[in-house]
Length: 308
Image (cartoon, rainbow, N blue to C red):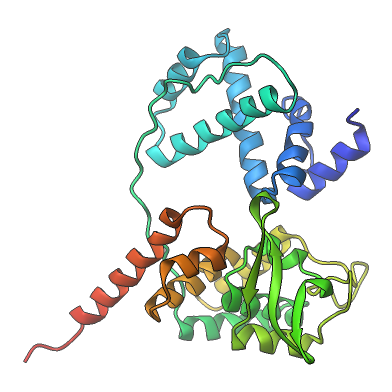
């Protein structure tokens, strides 16, 4: 039985302060995505918001759940292909959950709906000089040591922010007293071993690797001392630091540091299969975007060559 304390813990994790009456029934599904499927809080929040939009549309238009209602909604909204893809994915996932987990006889309303092709957007990531400016700005934050360590670690490992914040001493692989890799539990509760770059190793050595079940990245002072920050807290502090440094904050999110790591690996000649495994991608097609980004950057560099 799903109770109020469980729901309150879920909303807090997702960063939803006051869930409305349309979100409340979706709490068990949100917890399923978060705990059993290993989705990041941001992804869960996006799925729940899309489902709330879907059920409000059905109610307002007095339509039954089904493909015709989906087509009517898409016709009304005229979303871009990428937005349509995300919405359809949310519906497919929810109705699969109802059938396979809850045992309800529910048909997938996206059945027969064409999936629009969305052009891939190349990740635009910060260069080393911009990263140095960003790190300098982070030093002005109250939790400067924590935030600069996280930024450098994300850049040095390519981990998702949720993966980095979940790391504990027991996840470290040591050679003597030196950390050489981390065991990461990513999407779908799949575990992978990520070797540490020199940057990531330096971060852990500076922090002093914790033991056992103690989180690696935690607050150093105040009421939350010893507890890891939320992803939203990190994202907000990164944004403020980027703005102070006169940088585009969209290029200094935790995920953009992951992009920087991946693209630089490709530029250094690392095979896509290896990059795929390091990032925890299920499909190499997801990883190929970094190959395209690398080619674009090299093309830009070639075009700067002076004419003779």
